[in-house]
Length: 113
Image (cartoon, rainbow, N blue to C red; front, side, top):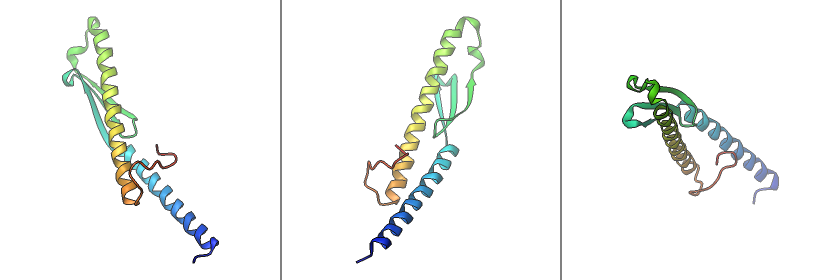
């Protein structure tokens, strides 16, 4: 049987490995892009899988003062669509990482859920 000290060292090494993998996943998620759309593609929002907004594209046909409220609603919807997609990609990547570590499905890693 392993001594308590050996078990503590093994636990510390495992924690360091998990922390390194979590940091790598955060970098990976910040480099993955998703695109939210609304108005049949007239408004597009690009974001990282972490939810950082990268850019907004608005079709020229919406640039009319009388369409201001419609444009605002479409931008809001596109942001929400991008955020939904970012959340799904992030959850999928975390699930893959947890599976590769041998963790059970739904296991909540501290700081990641």
